[in-house]
Structure formats: C-alpha cells, structure tokens
Length: 52
Image 1 (tube, one colour):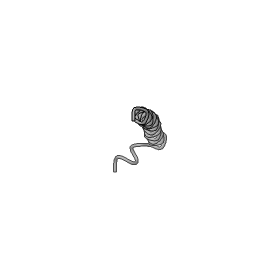
Image 2 (spheres, rainbow, N blue to C red):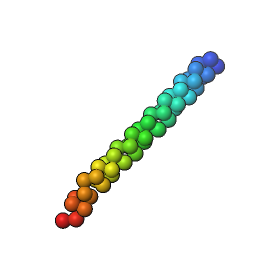
Image 3 (cartoon, rainbow, N blue to C red):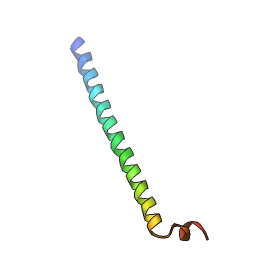
Image 4 (cartoon, one colour):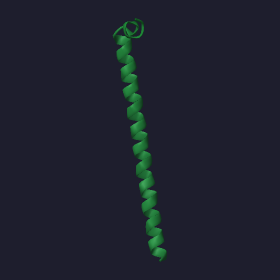
C-alpha cells in the first residue's frame, strides 16, 4: 500500500508540472498574439478603425 501511494503522489507531481508548463506556454502565446494585433493596428492607421 505504501508503494502505491508514493507512485500516485509521483504521478500527481508530474501532472502538475506539465500543467504549469502548459499554462506558461499558453499565457505567453496569448500575450504574443495580443501584442502582434496591437502592432498591426498601429501600423495600419488605428484611428480609421476606432473613430467613425
């Protein structure tokens, strides 16, 4: 029984590590996408889209 509980704890620790890595990657990609959209707006006359 003791070995099973240790292996389960090991699996949980491994899964949380993967989840943390995935979270960091997804947040980074979201920030990168938003920055690229902002840069595109500045390059293509932002006032034309916002003020009508």
